[in-house]
Length: 134
Image 1 (cartoon, one colour):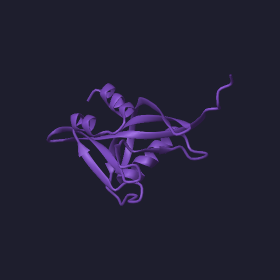
Image 2 (cartoon, helix red, strand yellow):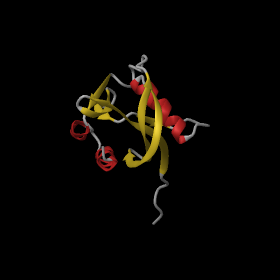
Image 3 (tube, rainbow, N blue to C red):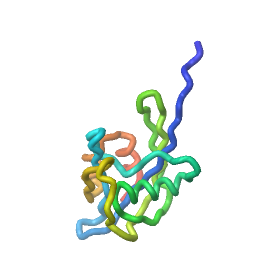
Image 4 (cartoon, rainbow, N blue to C red):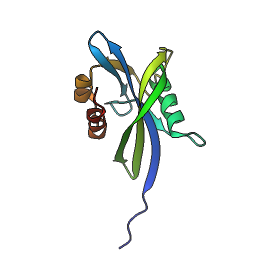
């Protein structure tokens, strides 16, 4: 029996973090369309590289321009009939905040890694964060 073709969607994002008096804090965003808390991420556009996409999505969803560090890893999950492959980089803000997209993201919170593990809606992102090792 032949299996159905798999549609793969490439996406990228960032673990945007900063130091605070509480220690490291991570940016998590709320998307009203899905009513979820997630790391900033989005689809790679035609002609765009993975890292370029990650930096753009972090800027659009958080309002912060960031510098990228190392590749943290990938999160893969099914979304309907597609397999999403999302590459994440460690990032630190270098400028901002600037106005951000209010249609895709209606809230941004800076939280500790422990708080992020409790807030994030998706297991794949919690695993990724757990492996990052603040």
